[in-house]
Image (cartoon, rainbow, N blue to C red; front, side, top):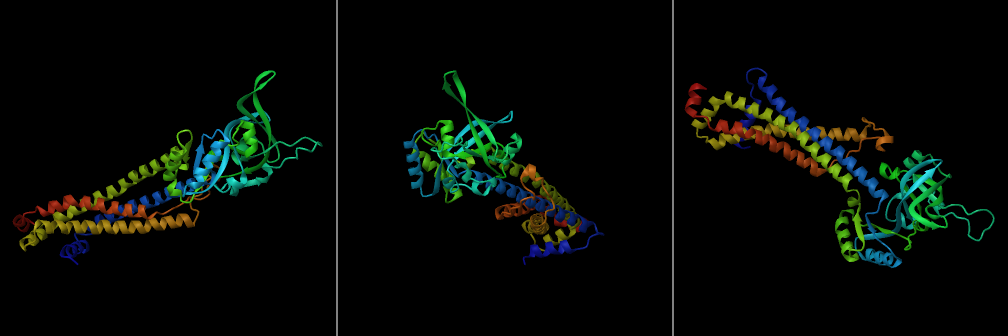
Amino acid sequence: MSLEFFIALRYLRAQRKGLFAMVTTSIGVLGVTVGVAALITTLSVMNGFQEDIQKKVIGAQAHLTIHGIASRRDLAEAAALAAADPEVAATAPFVLGQAILTYRGRSLGIVLKGLDPEQEFRVNDLAKTLREGSWEALKAETPSGEKSGRQPPPGIVLGEELARQIGAWTGEEVVLVSPQSVATPLGLLPKMQKFRVAGLLHTGYYEYDSTTGYSELSAAARFFGAEAGATGLGARLRDLGASEKAGRRLQLALGPGRTVRTYSQMNKTLFAALKLEKAVMFIILTLIILVASLNIASTLILRSVEKTRDIGLLKALGAGPSRIRRIFLAEGFLIGGAGVGMGLGLGLLLCWVIRRYPIVELPPDIYYLSEVPVSVQIPDVLAVAGLGLALSLLATLYPASRAARVDPVEAIHYG
C-alpha cells in the first residue's frame, strides 16, 4: 500500500470532534450509492422496455423489406438478389395496401397485408401470435366448380385491438373498401369486397394490433389489383445486427427503382424516442451523483482545514505538494469508490428483485405487459461505475489543490 493511501485511510478512520466527520463522510458515500443504484436500475428497466418493444416489432415484421415491385419480373429478380446475399436466410412476398374496414355501420382505416403463411412464417413470428382461429382458414374456399351454394368470401385475420374497436369477431363477415375506383356502367365506384374473419392475433404492439389485417396473398393481390401478385418482399437475416449493411448491399444491387428498408428505418421514430428517453434519464440521474460529489468536496475541504497542522508537519518532513495532493485524491477516491461499489450492489439487487418479484404491476391493456422488464447490460454498468468514480475525483481536485498550497510554517505555528 502506498503512503498516500495509508494516510488517507488513517484520516477516514480517525475520530474527529464528535460524530460530525462520520456523518459528513457517510452522507457523501450514501449520496453516491443512491445515485449509482438509481442510475443502474433506471437504465436496466429502460433497456428491458426497449428490448421487449424491439422483440415485438421484429416478431411482426421482416428484418428487411423490399418495396416498389411492379411486375412478376421485378419480383423474381428481387427474390434472386435477396437469396444471393450471404446474410439473407429466408424471403417471403407480400401485398401491402390501405383500405377501409366496415362492419355494421362502423368504419376504420386499416393496413391490409396479403401473405403466404408458409413463406411468411419463415421471416417473422406471426405464427406465434394467433389467439383465435387459424391461418389455414385464409385459404379455405369452396371449389370453383361447385354450384350448390355461393362461394364463401376470403378470410382475414385481424388484430385483437382492431377487432375490439370495430366489434367484429371470428366467423363474422366484414367489408373492405379499396381507395382505388372501379369502372362500372354507373361510373367510377369504390371497390368493395367481403372478407370473413378467420382469426384474431395479438402481437403485443398496439400499432399493429389496432391497424392491421392479414389476408391470403392472392386475395389481397386481387383486391388491390397487384399484377405482379405482390408489391414487396420481406427478408429474414441470419444476424439482426447486420441489417443496415445488408440493406445497403441490396439497395445497390436492386437499383433506384426499388426501395430497401430495415426494421429500424420503418420504426425510426419509435426507436429514436426510446434512445432519447434513455439519454435524458441518464443525464437527470447523473445529477444525483453530482450532488453527492459536491458533498464529498465539502467533506474534504473541512478535513483539509482540520488537518492543517498535520499537512504542515508532512511538508516539514519532506512531503511535496504533489504528495499532499495525492493524499486527498486518494481519500476522495476511497469515499467515491465505496459509494460506487455499494451503489452497484444495491442497483443489481434492485434489478433482481424487480425481475424476480412483480412489485410493480402494469395494466396489460395499456402496456401489453404485466411486469416491468429488466435487462442489465454490462456496458451500462461499467459506464455508471466510471462516471461515479470520475465525478468523485473531479470533486476532489479543489480540496486537494487547496491542501497542497498550505504553507508549512504557518500551518505548524497557527494550526
